[in-house]
Image (cartoon, rainbow, N blue to C red; front, side):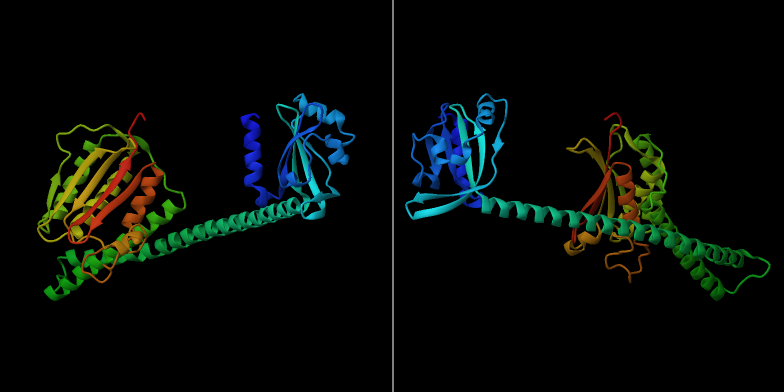
Length: 378
């Protein structure tokens, strides 16, 4: 018996109860039964002509010859019912029979028609349920996309409506602060300073909302080009150094003197992401701490730029919220200013530039944020 036929027998036996298979009957080239497997063994006599055991096979000679000559892959016969003697007495069988070629002649796969019908009904039901689920998913996706667009439109309009009067407030506060003709008393100047700082902070929030809305709606334009990491860092580090000096934070550049491949990115947006990492590393650091910037190639062939700090670190239960917009991870009531949208924007921008952002953090030791960028020429 060939290995292919043996596999058919094994498969039929293993799936006996799951698929309603009654057995497998093997016929020789003369259409005599040479072997049977499954519960058919009880009532099928080996050596008998197949048409004596299965009279309903009469009339299919041409089809069977086509199967034996490999001109036809299989033949599915109509469901039939008949009575046969078994070890448990006479039993009525309603069968579903499929004829396939074998090396010696034909192989007849006999299945319980009731089980097959139940299986087909179950498959149809599962297909219907899947179709309904797909339809509901498409509908939910369309609703979510529409809601997201509506949110972006609302945020954009609201931000513009706030930005105009806020610029006026800042402009008038600057006039009051610098008007030498009508100098203000020291206590009034202090109040003007508070107005100016609070106004600038609110303007940062408004600009962040506008930027986030543009990116989420796909309206941000990117100029992807080959960039030198050294040149990008030369633009970022002086700004970060000025911020760090205010809190006695040491800025350590581990990339200096090293050569790196060019990366594919938008210059302005990459600087924006790195400045966000650097400013966060300084703002949320301890007094007199340090911020380290480094770079190396990843196992995926991208170039990673990382910013590490010596701050208090981030608790694990907050990890899932790191890149959510307007989430300041418990720092809302602290003296450290922030909008909570910088990291969310960084993540969206990186993904649109075919990059990726990520982080590592340990409470009491600090955090490392990084961006992976595609290398030019890959």
